[in-house]
Every structure is written in structure tokens, then in C-alpha cells.
Length: 143
Image 1 (cartoon, rainbow, N blue to C red):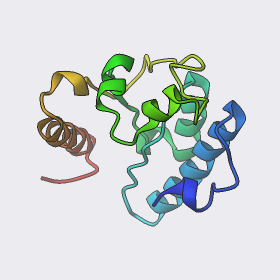
Image 2: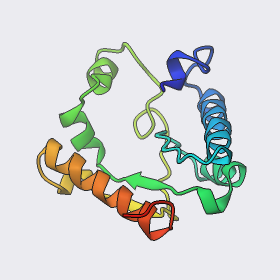
Image 3: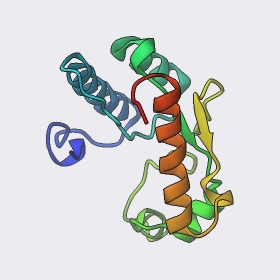
């Protein structure tokens, strides 16, 4: 589900709007957890305080921060969505790590240095395996 095209389509990308988008996503994730499902929610949460509130909302026992620690230059090189191309062309603004600070998680449950894992397809498979391993280690899934 893409929140930005659905329940968060009324939000932009300001600091407050990003925080609200994350809050809505965490409310949805919490509801899914309460229904017995595992929710994997992918967000760029540039501030530690916002991630802390998300953890509190969902519940620490059902929440994990997975930090994809790809350097900005590598993001610009890979750019699968064209975000950095559009940023350079002045078509978008408000990109964490470029237009404002990004606080890397000091308390990540898992850090994935995607740029060190090889070709994009190999890196993706490895990242998925590591996330699955985290879920198994926490008892959320049985192999």
C-alpha cells in the first residue's frame, strides 16, 4: 500500500507532514499487528524523536528500526525513482540529507549497508534475508 497516494495524499513533505505521514502509517501498522499480521512499513524518518514516537505507538515488542545506511552519493548514483535527478533539476525539494539534516538511527535493530552488498539484485536479496532473519530471531516468524 502506498500511503502517499491514498490516506496521506493530503500531505506534503514538510517536517510536520512527514511526521504525520509516519504517524498514520504506524497507526495502520499497529492495527495490522493487532489483527495478527506482520506489517513491514518503509519510511524515511529523518529524526530520532519521530522514530521514538513511532516505536511507542506500535509497541516496542512489535517494532524494529531497519536502517539502510546507503551514503548520499550512492543514492544519487542509483536513483531508481528519479528523485535525485528531479532534485538537481529543481522539480522537488525537501529531501532528507540534502535539504535538511538526517539523523541516522543510533538505536537501529538492524543496519543494512546496501551499497556494500553488490549489484542491486544481490543487495536486495541479501537485505530481504537479513530482515527475515531479524523477524525469525524475534520470534515473529518461524523458518
